[in-house]
Image: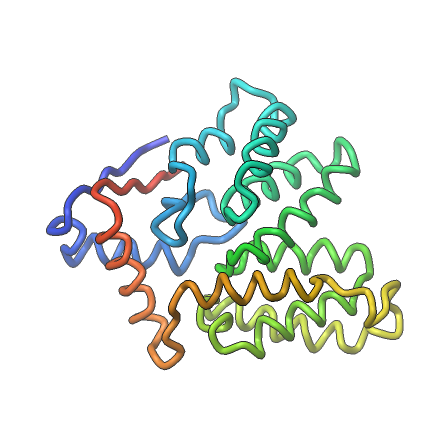
Length: 232
């Protein structure tokens, strides 16, 4: 693993570095081998090193890392990134035991509730719920993502297009759904937690994606002295 250490405001504000960071923010996805600095995009109570070790410490079995991460998750229920890590870990061994597939769905759901709106957790939910034929819940999720301007603003363009497509497809599948409109993906209290997390981001819906990414970079500069990008 190569670590690119970017320190200080002057260096991060150089043209090439800023372009690089902006590209990482736009292109990072669940299929990517790029593990972007966890807290530069959204804050976490855990350090980048802690989260990265949970994901990639091959000296420990995945099951052991899941147990360790679950202990941390119970201690910090509102941290979005620990839920994303658990979602990824559980999905990586889904074929070993079906319980891990179910857990990956639940941790994706919790990541969304905690305010992780980059798109990865929401996409994992859509994929998992499609397999379970819970089309009503997919429609509920996609509608919430696309109807709320502040949530939609946080999603990259590729994810907006993805969820728009999935909304149309799954609306046509509702007659085949094993769930009903009363089988909600989020309770009222959970939905409120999600909206509160969004409000805490102070999103300006009138700015472009480019300006939003620049704002995220500037926010990271003001809150951290040392930032790391981890590249596999």
